[in-house]
Amino acid sequence: MPRPATLPVIDWKAVFDSGLDYKAWLEAAESEDQRGKIEAQRQALNLERPVAAYLAALPRPVHVVAIAEDWCGDVVRHAPVLERMAEAGPALKVRYIRREQHPDVFVRFLTNGGEAIPKFIFLSEGFVECGHWGPMPERCKELISRGKACGDVAAARKKVSVLYEQDTARREVVAELLRLVETAVCPEP
Image (tube, rainbow, N blue to C red; front, side, top):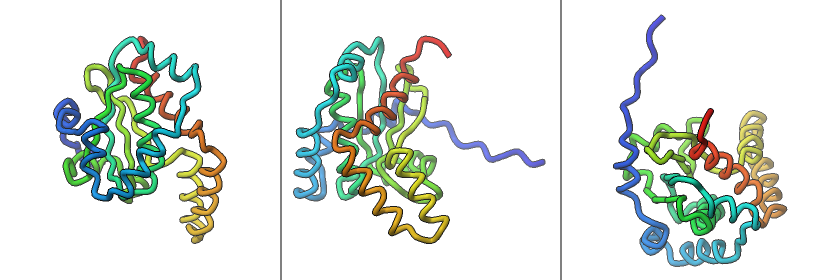
């Protein structure tokens, strides 16, 4: 049996260092309207106290490379969640990159073979990849996959919209991102 292709090693620290912090990323947004929507979402979002306390007490840094562009509706929805989490936990360090900036990175995180964003790649203190998230919560991704399987993506998107409307506090996204933070700071397997 032939061996599978070996992907090149990614220098995650270099990728992280090439990214922009939230403020610079937002200032570089292509659309002033989208910039306003992203910032309004961030300002409107409040993390629950236990979540904020957990993030504030992180024992060591967690680095996140966020592949995100302001034109995308899921980025508008989810980048503010990641930013609020980073504001609550100073050890949670986030840098934003565009898809074209590191195509070798982006191609590793396609969604069912498609280019979907945002993608949040979680890295340990030593820049070891610990997991990734995106472009939407698992339950929503499953709905889209089911819609593709049965040939009715439009109906699936409507169901995703309903889920988004029901979870205005973004609890589902926060919970999924917290699991990745916990993995990145874990002291043992």
